[in-house]
Amino acid sequence: MKEKALERKLVCAVMEMGGIAMKFISPGLDGVPDRLVLLPHGRNAFVECKAPGEDLRPLQRKRKAQLEALGFSVYCLSGADQIGGMLREIRGA
Image: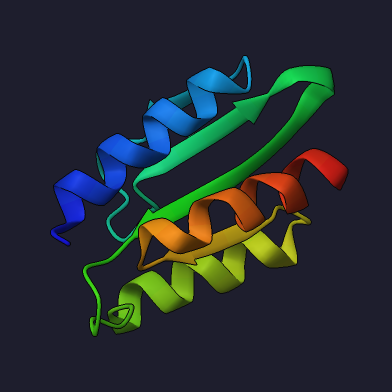
């Protein structure tokens, strides 16, 4: 599954839960995750979508570590089968 298709599935799944999955773009700061997932009751996480078999680039790993050090959850999503479990984890956090 291509990254764009995976991202669309994520957006739809988040909307079904009553949330939004904002496209996250940060001019001047490369390597940020693709989406900021916002769920009801203040639950949130950053999500990087990758095609199957692709890994985070070094700069993306650095940004993930920076965000996690600040206390944010950051997920790397590489398959549609991971969406439900990831969203349940975010919702339960």
